[in-house]
Length: 360
Image (cartoon, rainbow, N blue to C red; front, top):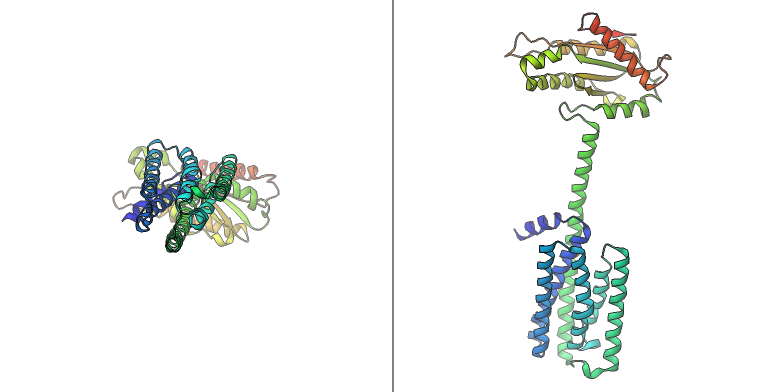
């Protein structure tokens, strides 16, 4: 339950920097709490124990501030400065300086600063972390009286505890971030697929839309127009009357029914595609070895549409009128000429009485 809520919270973050902030804040908070507990176990001075719990409280308050204000970048910088400028240097002296395991955390602080999103700020934080660490080492060497001395047993326990805590934290964090990355990548792929679908498909009929067809016609078909490509443009006869008489929901049903027929005869492996060109107008891109074969396929679509029946509307008759042209015709100097040519044949079929196909 906790992991699911944590996953949901982190996946709602806008940027990867926000994710790193909350994960790092959690780790720093855990490390501060564990340091406080270990200082009690190791029987360190009361001031050391108090300071460790104070550090933990500061981390908690910083998390509350970030949650309320949503100023993650500012809080990230504050966290880095708090770690590198106050928490680590003071704990370094309280835990025996170079004889303690706190030195390992200085490396972690540089890594923490390196995760900031803005380059200039990132470089300044890294420089601050390095200077802070080096200064702590030099001062502890020059003023050993400022260092809280710890015995060999305490040093041993300190290193064992630090190794255990860091191993668990780094292992769990790396594993979790990889999992989170995989989830984010999955969301990204799903979003890209949805955008691709919206860019190429008509949501009502699930056919390719006009934009995709024009792009496909210009980039693929036009260059291979001699390879048996035919454009069959057709629309539903008297569709306005159907909408006016039976309503738009029924009109949408008719559109989907006609689209299903077009999709059923589409051979994508041959480069064919069924398209909703706009309104009640459709295009079937046909690949055939001759005009006769292409016309036979267009006629099949027409007869199948003619056979559409509705049990609750036995009087309803659906028909289409269309035009058919060969893309390889020398008369077509451009893609626009193909479309205007087939459009003219469609209107000719309408003028001749509808429910028919005109070809060149």
